[in-house]
Image (cartoon, rainbow, N blue to C red; front, side):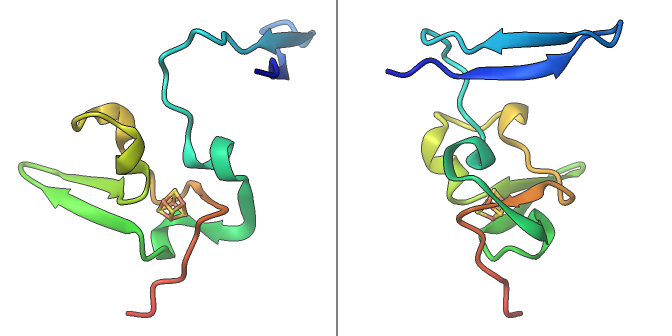
Length: 91
Ligand code: SF4
């Protein structure tokens, strides 16, 4: 498996290389797996749905397939940049 390297900036403004841990159990985001679509957000995607109890949680029905169970880690923010699987909600 190819090792992914990302460049970020530390607290002091220095560029730092982040090397992805190949043994990481963290689920990749939809944007990491499928890329992004400019000018669109998850808010208008037909794959977004809402769970309600004492508050609202937004989830992605496609991303759910990659998670076991339901947790806060799989919450979606409406303002997230849309991923490559975005499909416009016609409603
Ligand atoms: S844009 Fe992508 S991540 Fe966002 S709700 Fe749609 S399919 Fe899910």
